[in-house]
Structure formats: structure tokens, C-alpha cells
Image (cartoon, rainbow, N blue to C red; front, side, top):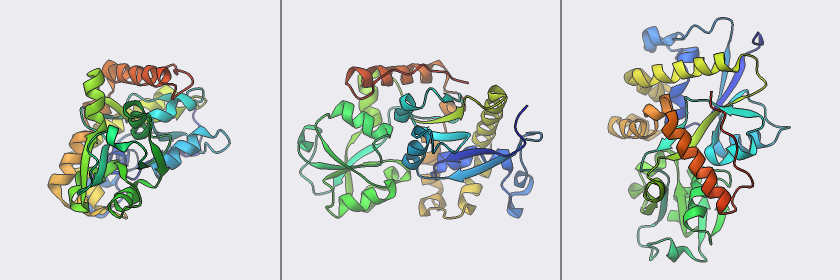
Length: 297
């Protein structure tokens, strides 16, 4: 039997993670109409949702003494460090299908290629992120500084870093911030492998009772959120701390099209193959110690 306490579920605060889980608890707003209530019969099981920066979630999951969440978003790059304690859920992952994190420089920078970065400082959203892992595969000899993902655009524009890796919605507005992309890590990965780039995963503690039943609820939630696009967009616009770009319908649609795709509903064999390839290449490059077994629920 599942525990009577609420299942804790942590996700990042970006649009694709936020919209995936509202069907579990309902939008809880009078303007949502029928969507105000849960869209899934979870029986006696409750869910307690928390939004935190993805690198913060990575570090919490990696540290066994701090792994406080039953279900959590993590970067695909962090999974080898937690595979003994967490399984991957088939639903809820983010894949860049020939697009992904953007490597940016100031618009007037002389840097144009990976080779031009030699000796320069790159701002990254975390050492455990897939964005950083992919950059290391493409460009092994770089200096880096970890920053909160939302601080990176300003740091690059202000000259605090020579280049930066943009994740989340900042990828869509980089020109408005005086930046220029010199590489798209998803496109680079696709050119090397012909596969989508695994970015974020949703993982669940192996020691929870009825893990497969819970994974089924998560899959149903993602499917509903993807199908009810208008309700999901309305939910984002009402969310506390909603971002300016969420008010731009075209930008919001563009972002959700990128990161709430059919592979988010079910990663399938293509997603599994992409993960296997990422870990094989990272192991060959000496960036991870072991290739984790892929237990996908």
C-alpha cells in the first residue's frame, strides 16, 4: 500500500515542468472552471508539489542525506549518480529534438566557434546539467563558473563571463538581451548522433510502494496537460511569479512545442537510445564513471 502522507514531487520553475503536474492536484483557481479540480482519480494519494532550480534539485538528489523528494526533476547528466536510488519515469522527460541549450556571447563578441573559447570563461547553469555535459563533449578545454540559470544572460551581457549556456525560456529572448548564439547544443548533438538530446528527466524513488502505479498517474497527468494546451497556458499565466514571456502567446506556444512534445508524454525507445548514447559518450570521454542501467517505468 502507498503511504498515507502526500507524495512529494519537485520540478523546475520553467514552463514545461510547471504544466505537467497540475492535472494531479487541479489548478485551484475559480477562473479554471472544470480544470480547477484534479483531472485524475488518485484515490487516497495526495501530491505535494514544489518548484526549485534544476541544479538545486540535482544536488539534493545526488546527496543521499538530502534527497527529500519522492519524485523529482533532474538533469539527464545527473542520473548516473542517483541510478541506484531512483528509476526514470517514461513520462515527464525533456528532449531537444535538434535544438537545445544555447551557447551565447555578447552580440559584438569576436567569439564565433567552440575553438574561440580556449581560455575564456563560460557561465553554466550547473555542473550536473546536461547543458554542461554536452558542452564538455563538444569543447573539453574550457573554464566555467556556475550561476543560477536566470543570472547567466545578464552576466554575459555585462562582461562578467565571456560566454554562457542558456536554458529554459531565456533561449527564446537572447537577442533582446544583447546576446548572440554561437552554438545550439541540441543541434550539435544531433549532428553527431542523429538523436534528440536528453535534457531533463523525471525520476521516482525505487523504494516507494507501488512505483509503477505512481508512474502511471504521472504519465496520465502529462498526457492531459499536453492535450489541454489552452488550460495549461492559462495555468502558467496565473502562476505566482509568472514570467513576462508567458504573456506572449507566440513565445509560449514556441516553448511548449519545443519541450512538451510526444517524447515528453512517452520517451519510447528513441528516448532510451538517446540516453544510452549520451552516457556511453560521456563515459568514453571520462566525464562520468559508470554507465547507469536504464530502469524506465
